[in-house]
Amino acid sequence: MKINKICCIGAGYVGGPTMAVIAQKCPDIKVTVVDVNATRIAAWNDTDLNKLPVFEPGLDQVVEEARGRNLFFSTDVEKAIDEADMIFISVNTPTKTYGKGKGMAADLKYIELCARQIAEVSTTNKIVVEKSTLPVRTASAIKNILDHTGNGVEFQILSNPEFLAEGTAVEDLLAPDRVLIGGDTSEKGQQAIQALVDVYANWVPEERILTTNVWSSELSKLTANAFLAQRVSSINSMSAICEKTGADVNEVAKAIGMDSRIGAKFLKSSVGFGGSCFQKDILNLVYIAKTYGLNEVADYWEQVIVMNDYQKNRFSDNIVSTLYNTVSGKKIAFLGWAFKKDTNDTRESAAIQVADNLLNEQAQIEVYDPKVTEERIYADLDYLNTRSEEENRTLLKVKSNPYDACKDAHAIAVLTEWDEFKTYDWQRIYDNMLKPAFVFDGRGILDTKALKKIGFVCYSIGKG
Ligand code: UDX
Ligand code: UDX
Ligand code: ADP
Image (tube, rainbow, N blue to C red; front, side, top):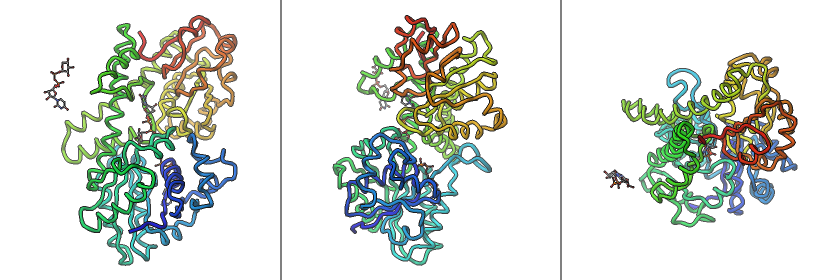
C-alpha cells in the first residue's frame, strides 16, 4: 500500500515539525496539517518565517523548502481527512483537571473528538496513526469509536509515538535513534505498519525502524519518558546531598556517566525538569498502575515527581533564606522562563513554580527570556490561580532586555540554560545591581569563578 496523501490533525509542537520533516523528505506525498486554531494555522502560513508558532532551530528552512510544494497548513479539517490515506492524530492530551483521575489521568477528550470526526467524514479506508502521548490502550478506544460510528469504511490504527525533544526537534526527526511503530498483528495490521515503515524509510535506515504490537508501542513512550525523568530526579536528589557535603554534582555526574552501563546523558542537575511530557507521562503511568491495583509500582514512579517538586521548591527556599529570610519588596531578576533552552515552550517549566513561590513571599520579579512572550508568561501564572491576574501583573514584569531585568535587582535567578546568558557583560550587570549582588544559577551554566571575582555572591545547584 503506497501512501499518497497524509493529513495531520493538530499543528502544535509535535505535529508541525514532524509533518514538515516528512514533507521535506517525501516530496511525492502531499502532507496537510490541520488545526481548529485559525490563528495558529495563519502563523504556520506566514511568509515571515520568524512568526512560525513553534520555535525550533532549523525548522524555518524545512518549512520554507516544503511549504506550498507538498506541505500545507489549513483549517479545513474535514477536507483533509477525507482525501488522506493516512491520518496522524497529534492533538494535545493534557492531564485531566476535573473528575475521575483529576491531576493524573490523561484527558482524552480531544482525541475522542478527532476519532468521531474521522469516523463521520471518511468515505475511503484509512490508516489512523496516534502520535500524541497516549496512555496504554487508547488505540482500542479509538478503534471502537471508528468501527461503531463510521460509514462502514475500514480503519487500521497504528501507534507511532514521538521521541523528539523540543529544541532539537528537527535534528531528532532527521536522525532519530529509532522510529517505533506499533500495530495490529493481523495481516491488515501488518500491511498498515509496512505502509508507515515505507514513509520513514525515505530517510531513516531500516534497522532503526522498530515494529511492535500496539500496546508495547504505547507503553514504550511512557517508559522512555519515565526513565529519562527518573535520571534527572536521581541526579537532582544527589545535588541536595552534594550541597550539604561539599561534593560537586558535576564531578559526580561525570564520574558515574563514564560507566558505560550508566552513560553520560540526562545527568545534568537542574532546578527541575519541565516540558509537556515528563510529568504528564509519569502521572499517566502512576494512574495506570493504580488502576490495576499495582500500588507499589505507582508509588515508585510517583516519587520521581515528588523529587522534582522538591527540587523546584528547594531552589526558591534557598533564595529566600539566603536573602536574609525575606524577599518582600525585593527585586529578583529571572533569566529564562522556557522549560529548557532553544524552545519557546513553557509547559510545566520550573520557572513557573519558582516564580509562584517567590511571589507568595511578595518578591518583585522581572523576567527576561529570549523567546517566550509576555502573554505566555502571564497565562502560565494566571493558570495557577494563586492570586488575581492584577496582582500577577503588578508583582511580575516582563522585560525585552536582560540588562533592564537585572537593573537594581537584589538577586538574579537562572531558570533556563540559554547559551546567550553565558556571554553577557556580567561586570555591567553587577555594577547596576544592589549589593550584595546574588546569583542563583539553577542550571549550572555560568562561570561562577569569574562571577565571584567580579563580586557576585554565587549559588549553583549541587555545589557545596
Ligand atoms: C556491582 C556493580 O555493578 C559494580 O560496579 C560494583 O563494583 C559492585 O556492585 P555486582 O553486585 O557484582 O556489581 O553485580 P551487578 O552486575 O551490578 O549486578 C547486581 C545485581 O543486579 C545482580 O543480582 C544482577 O542479577 C542484577 N541485575 C543487573 C539485574 O537484575 N538486571 C540488570 O539489568 C543488571
Ligand atoms: C522529552 C523526551 O526527551 C522526548 O523523547 C519526548 O518525546 C518528549 O519529552 P522534551 O520535553 O522536549 O522531550 O525535553 P527534554 O530534553 O527531555 O528535557 C525535559 C526536561 O528535563 C527539561 O526541563 C530539561 O531542562 C530537563 N533536563 C534534561 C535536566 O534538567 N537535566 C538533564 O540532564 C536533561
Ligand atoms: P503537542 O506538544 O502535543 O504538539 P500542542 O498543544 O502544541 O501539543 O498542539 C496540539 C494542537 O492540536 C493544538 O494546536 C490544538 O488546537 C489542536 N487540536 C486539538 N484538538 C483538535 C481537533 N479536534 N481538531 C483539530 N485540531 C485540534
